[in-house]
Image (cartoon, rainbow, N blue to C red; front, top):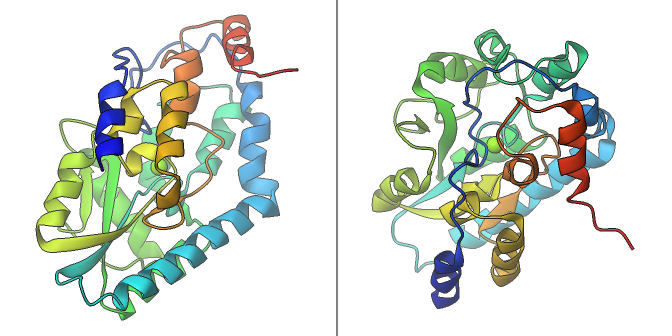
Length: 267
Ligand SMILES: [Mg+2]
């Protein structure tokens, strides 16, 4: 733990950067075009490899949950904590529409959420139902805002996700930091798994630093991945991308491409 704490002190706070997978920001005129999103979004919709990665993540989650069930030292009830967007619900159709119509988030985000038609990420539903059958409780910690609670419940209920109630669905409140919500769960439960597509779904420190530090933190925590931390792929958005271009749609296509290219490592 000392290593983790010391790394958190190394964290560089980047005030101007959108926090993690927080999908709330002010609408701005789209000066860009969204063709740069094509490959990432197609990876989610057309690559069977992406689906395989999701199954792989939830298969490992099941193994780890089974290990926890055999651990007599865990005296509190067991909890599995999952993020929602790109962890249990697939929002790639929203990204697709942004590309096709050349608009940016948050245009259509309200409409997409209200449609409550996002499909489950492969493997997520079976795993969470399994968790329920073995006595673990599922907590959904999402940075969707409170105003989207009802439609999120409706979407999750459409596929019969377990534990979809006010106690287990924890929406974003005044801050995107998920740590206080995780601490609430930890009062009564032993969190055996944290499952998400963004590293901030595991530790807040990942959400407030640059990409270089995020790599260092991942290296220092490498034994946690596939153990207590289960990562889902998300090539479409995340702090890793915001760290390159900023949380700012008000830049030209040329500037966006220049900033994105600045992140490339060549030989
Ligand atoms: Mg997410």
